[in-house]
Image 1 (cartoon, rainbow, N blue to C red):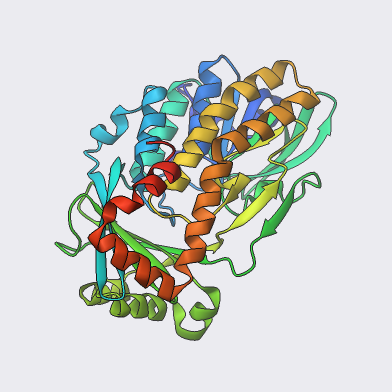
Image 2 (image 1 turned 30 degrees about the horizontal axis):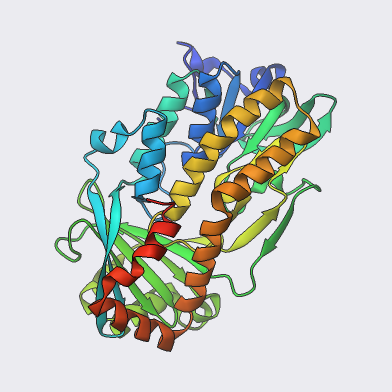
Length: 392
């Protein structure tokens, strides 16, 4: 999917920004990760004229864990896309193996799948286009002001900049959400001491068990690893920014592994190419403004563990699409309030639980004691796992 512009039209490559700017879109979605592509697909299936834009050219990798949890698979099945994991022979994920100090606990997880973001995101994008959404890549979108019954936007690539119009905009462009930086209605707060995400993908045989997320916890943060559909390892970590300044990314990861019995992984970590994210834990309030809905990571984020972020992205996309389509025809102040309430209903409790877990992960002694207990009584983790996983 390296084409600059993708649509159902045979002459899709001939579409330029000027043409897109002359169109009136019912729903314009910014960001074509799982949240954006699913929202675009679901809106298009409801008959809306949808434009999906992304600053990256596909296929592309993401600094992210690649686990689709049990609730995420349930969300995909609810919209007829449960087959995608089988299409790529995505491995099942059924266990969290937690390493703290020299203690290992093994916690059963509701069955999920592990699928690379390059494969998953491209597949979801193809489904959005198949449903009727137009897609343009290599474009930076910036949300502008409301003018009557439309939201203005700037669409910009390397050669031109145009003003676009949409009756409703959905921002799904990730943690930093650059598209909404100029929106005075939306406030962003980054948590004090928020950890930084780093990720890599590398080839390695037999270094982690099959069907397992292996997580190593240390003072510097934590590192999770899972095997993907092609046999490679996806590694994602949340690291303390002060520790990164002192020891660097590889130094932090090596320290975590050596302190948690993961020495077999240090050579892979040292050789991998690591990419980073902005600070992870942040909130945007409100998650809706006039003719603007925020979904996925763009609406806020807490530290990830076993695929929760992916699940939340998909669930919010599915829930936001009908609200956006209805809002394109009949927008009112109640529309924004509806999305704010629905977003809170979907995620507030589960994100609170993840915040509490993140706090405990910053307490080495508490984590060691908890992991020793879980190593002999793993069933104690079951209520927390079920709650964070969305009642799976």
